[in-house]
Length: 173
Image (cartoon, rainbow, N blue to C red; front, top):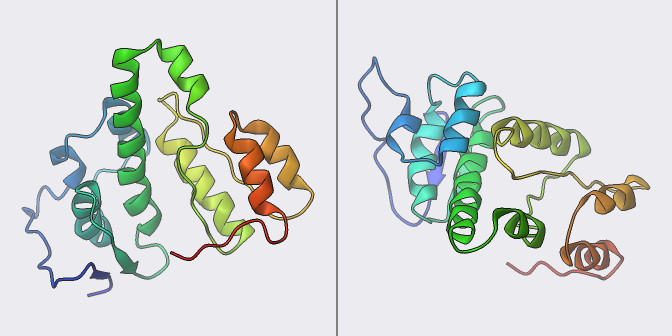
């Protein structure tokens, strides 16, 4: 097994028929997310995606290790995108959609260890969400931080700038 999944209990990989392991079809994903998956030409879920996407969509905390190229990025982006899009749909049902998008601010924060990985995650996130109203932005260290912060909307921008200053944030969890 190349993927390792831990969330407090042993699991058995789900059984998918050999001719149809496109796990995304069975997950009741937002229409925009399904269109994004189709646009990426994802016809088969990788092993790590088969093991992680369903429990992540159920809100389970996961610790996943797998080799480079195994599909880990989409394994966490798909459930994250689904959660954001579902929340947006619920808000839009009760408010003006334009107003909802403008007030949303920062909805998720993904921390990665290198600029190159940040660029790769941003690229996949933008491709996945291209047909939705959700926008993604990468912020990396250096002079480009403030230019990237300017691209974000809402009060979260100032809070994020404060977090990026020395001593501005402590991540205990």
